[in-house]
Amino acid sequence: MPKNKGRGGKKFRSGKKSTDGTARRQLELKEKDQEYARVEKMLGNRRLLAITNDDRQILCHIPGKFKSRVWINVGDVILITIRQYQDDRSDVIYKYDQHEIKQLSRLTVERGGLSDKIKDIDDDFQDDEIISIEEKSEEELDNRPPVEYPSEESEESEEIDSNINIDDL
Image (cartoon, rainbow, N blue to C red):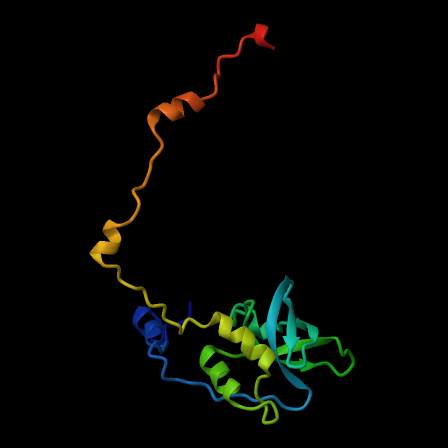
């Protein structure tokens, strides 16, 4: 059996993860033959349908290096590379998180930012809006109409007679 090298165990593994979120990735912008896209539908077998900046649906393939490491869902913004030999197919290169999407939306399309079509869909998924609830005064609560509950007599009259005789048929 191999000797233990002193790297392992509960305390060592728990120290690997950084949960404070200070480690930010560098923003990756698109290059030649790359496009921004939003996931429209997951098809299974590591494939998905995405809508690009120029409002074109394209079939994308998720590579094996993303398998079980990066989870892609409907509505996520991804960076894809268009295949040179197949215009209607592409491969996923990168998945953007919410912070990176906000940075990309600030850039113009000419500088490599997101188009309005992808930005509009992104606004639907944001939870930044706070809905204010008006407090009702006691007078408004007292002026409400009373709630009427069904009486027991009406329920008995609506019951179906479950005793059916053969002669009734």
